[in-house]
Image (cartoon, rainbow, N blue to C red):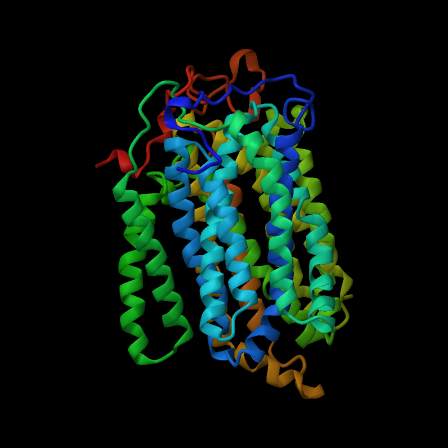
Length: 520
């Protein structure tokens, strides 16, 4: 029993969201909002800063061979953390998984920052990833419990805005600290800052969102099947990544074993009908993965393309993406406006078209006479579309989730996001290598070879643009009950005025919320 939470017989039911409290920074929500935004800010700063220090850390620890595992360890453990957090939060509330998640996140940073060997560094990243998975899902559950439907778009927009400053300042600050103080201080400095959101957010969460959903009811037990599937998805992802990084015939064995674990686990953890784009919640979850995966897979190759094909410095190549942080926050702000709610589905379709156009336009810079700054403009447009889509998928997921399933469904959304990133990055990387991408760096060392592999980049960007266009189609299937709106007027979120869109009573799931668990 945590000291942060009262005994079961002392738990009050979570307070119902209070509308009309002056918005997310009004008296009813100010402390809670500031605390959660601070948590997101620190996670964003860590994500943008640690990547800059990672190469130096791997070199000093003589662990270049394990460099990729420092990233994959975070991913594999975060998947398990997401599922566990969803189960835990639905059972007893989000306070405990959030507290443990922040502690694990900070502890992992300390372990990596004090590591004397690369395997300890990787272990720290694994601990950190587990904490990150717990935190992100728990925060979604807090939003579903503490904020009413009209306030959720605004808090999601605030979460997106929390990434703007870190995306611009993080790499520069990390580079400066690494150069003058050493890479360890990039890892050791962030945990000290975790104390602030911990002190601010947790008491507010205890007052507004702790305890089981049903007052006086018996907490639902952990779904052991989902926990087993979570272990399967984490282990399977780890084996697949190991096989991809060790290109020998023997690597086929862990690759096949990873796929055998991963595929059934994914099918069991995501809502039934996700990969068939079934209307409603399954399509919301699918769209999140399609949008995030296609965009991040393409974005990962933008700096490399600018450095090797157009001769930009790594710093300038990174800053070419800085505008995207602002436009992403702008798109999230637009979708948060109440007057945009009736047109949410149209905004999401437009957003995915923007993403597809940006990805397709980026490789134009491979043509020598095309100005380099066009990439920054194109990526700003794409990030605007992502802001419209990502914020809206979060809002719609909570809208379509009964309170007792908010944690489980939030975990499914994050799993879709993370898995799509890995799968599409792997596919893009394979295509890149097949067309000589592995020799890009070597070609760049010679002036005459600087632009000798443009096709390797084209086969990454154009397929990802096609995936994004598929996302535009999926965005037309988010309405769980298609049909004309009452009196011809649009209803909230662009959906028809139907009781199937939102449960008429708390705890009554919409028809589209059935997931694979209900089959067994």
